Length: 106
Image 1 (cartoon, rainbow, N blue to C red):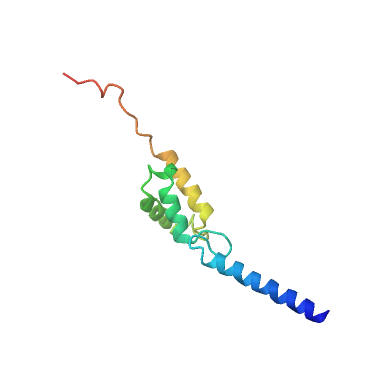
Image 2: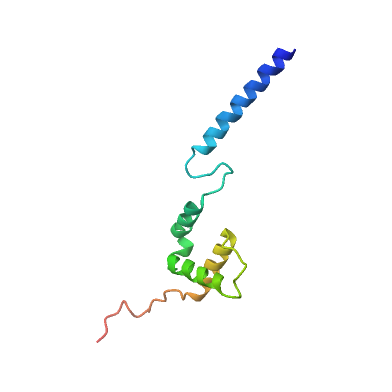
């Protein structure tokens, strides 16, 4: 009976090790299944929703704001970054096209 339990436990440990190795070598995800910081920022840069923004400029603005008295004590979390970018989108005007551009002007 004891031998059987030992074999089952060792088999479970081996399976857990294999699963952990798979998770750690996946490349895009960390062991918790979350994107790494640089990969997270790259995914936001590539996101079509944020095409209108100057991404690096907005992150620099956020860094500067965090140094002000109002932003002091706050942290640069992923949720704060997404919120900052979404608010910045509200300030950026849509590219309005002139409906008369297709006609030549005299």
